[in-house]
Length: 550
Image (cartoon, rainbow, N blue to C red):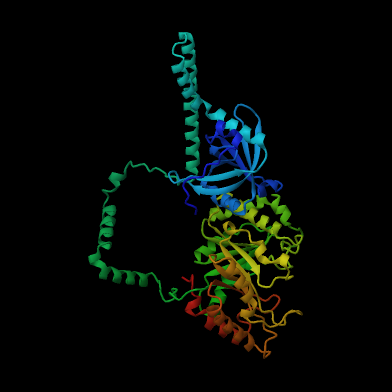
């Protein structure tokens, strides 16, 4: 986060410096970034107010809740539109500029933007400055009037009285403007601080006199006494035994990778996961389900996953599974699905627990309608649609959702315009980077047997170089049963053992692995054979893969 406390003053053009200089004024303005303004139906004006304004730029205070948005705008150096409402008239001035700074004031903590105007638009800039002058002239004019009153002390009493009256009126106006500024400051300040709910104290004193409350207070004193440590530890162990709590399966310090299982047809995933856990002899902390763009928000899945101490990851695909209706990225960007997206955002906020969202995965393949291939061979629509969905969740207050940006290990077609890194939405929109990859063996006419390292080495190296501070996971993986070196089920078992070795030595940044546990293009199941199941049991039971297990 930037810590710069002061902004470098932006001075007016030379011809105007003597007249205007830097004008310190609280003037309401509206901001919109180029991407939102150029998107049909997507213009999102943000209300702010100036602290400094000149012919060259302005210092504008905006709500702290919009920090991610404006930092991203500043980082991308994209054009912004500044709208000034001229006081006392219906006239509106528009000025284009760029956000050059985004930081917090040292004394108040408010978020400010340093906006530098583009060249040209002299009349509009002058009008904006004049609007600021009109707003604060009452605070400045009384000083001139006071000087004039001293110089003209010998003037007629009537004239002196008239000037004094003007000064009084202007001083009152200045007081009103200052009150308005403080009111606006307070409003913005409330946006960035937690609300405190007062509690009525009536009856509290009497409640402390109750015997049961006195006993509980005495227990707290006893339990927090270091002299009772040995007995307290023994009591804790006995209590744990009585409650049926065991620490045998707790993750160790070696635990590095979180194990997940993807259930494509997840209508009864709890029973399905229970069965898989019995097969491999351990609990599975992460469950991955799949939903299309006509599914309701899966509140039941969220609540049941939390009750079962599972982390739920939803793969949300912008399409209809029924294929009866085509969903396009341009329609999403234009806002045609906003009501539907908002229903998910409100559901996620209402749930309140941690929820992982993998939206529009494997975009660098050629098999999904949201792919770069299907959108004029350009990643622009994918980036805009991803951000649009993310922003709807942010505006709804669904801050408990964590966002996964997921590429395919193999880029199809493998061309420069289809480079997955070109479709990255930005750090403000991504919490985890994910890679999907499979060993199809000879299950497909054009595929061949590949080791885990051969599938993931190239995309993994690109990701960790480009994003050194983002967590990385394997979003989907599995191994087919046909096409191996020996032509037997032992090939799949060996593939699993080799995957374990590769994850430990070649992929240290990987913090999660999701196994695609179903039979689809191939028999991906861990239990496709006795050999495969035994290998899965031995690998997944290791402490290295116990991260997140309870």
